[in-house]
Length: 398
Image (cartoon, rainbow, N blue to C red):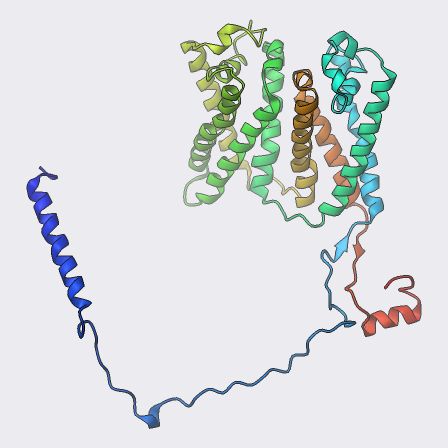
């Protein structure tokens, strides 16, 4: 036997012998090798140091206090971007209100529900009616958020780091595409299941998939693109299920609920998201969900691995302004509504909400990026700054 008594005895002998030899080397006078010193004539001369002559920056010298970033957008760029995004942003929300059998006032009243606690007790017919107070509240919220976020865009976009091309496509844009495809397909087969999906958590799952898949595809450079795509799709497909399962278990729906919702993309007749059968185990539904999940995970990954060298790069500010920050705003609004009016979370179509944020982010980012950059001079008055003030070019600045 490879792990029998003889094997154990040999191991003990080897361990004891090695430990003994090591201890012997630690005894006084052992483990040392003495070498004679080199003759004094052949030794190196001692090194002597000398102070450098670099002039230190002092108060009043140019560059004494460097201001970063050196180039920024003016405040007006953030205001214009926020106003432009605020004008374009309501269009998807209003279209959803009109084409979802609700009304033009429904998304406006839901927006007011972010800060007005009583809106959560209103019925759907009441939310579909015109209300002057809710309209005024919604307009104030929309204008304030648009202007504030636009100003944030003007300040942040020049300072944010660039986003790698692979991450911009796989971790940002692909999850939005996947979410849109799933939302559309479910709307055709089982529109009633839309209310059973937590779309912010769904997007989080897609984001997890995109990051894991992109890392495998970009790092496993020694493998063919198709193999990298299969490996990345397999890893991403496993990891993306974790947020969905955590959401389902945390909300008391059970482990089978998100799996059955996924199967609902292909099984017609599942119209009630609160039906008990959605929380039960079904072998056929599980097999169908695994097939759908595997095809989408591997298909997206292989397409990504093959098309990545051919697709254009997404500029860093556009990736941040048009993709990342809209997801941050969506999460903020989702959490705020969960505190003020948790009931309204189920009445908001979060996919259309994300589309609205996406429209705002792209519009605001384009307006901000197309504005001129303002150079920020270093603090202090050196010879160059004195010349500016003498000629009048720097008047009013200090």
